[in-house]
Figure: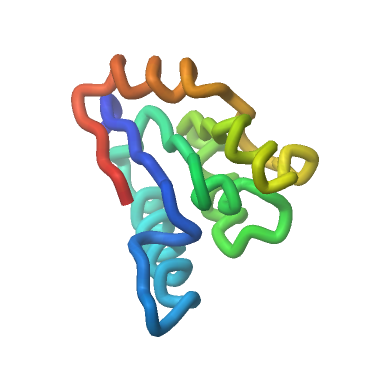
Length: 114
C-alpha cells in the first residue's frame, strides 16, 4: 500500500440514505484497521464533503492523527474547505490545492476511492 493514495470524498465511507452515522462508523473502522496494520498508504486526499474529516470535532480525528504520526500524508482540498468555510478549523494534514492531489495520484501505483 505504500504507493497507494486513498481518496475520501464523502463525510464518511460510502453513503447511506437511512443512516448518517453508518458511513462515519465504517470510515472509523477502516482507518483503525489501516493504523493497526503495517501496510500504510502514501497519502489520503480529502475533497468535497470529505474535507469535513480533517477539521476539529471530526469523528475520525484521532484515527487520522495517528496515521499522520506514522507518516501518511493527509491532503485537504483548499477550494472545498473555502466553499464550506472550514479552512480555519483544519487541525491535521496540509491544506493543498488540486495540483497537490493530482501529484499524489500521479505518483501512486493505485488510487482507492472510499
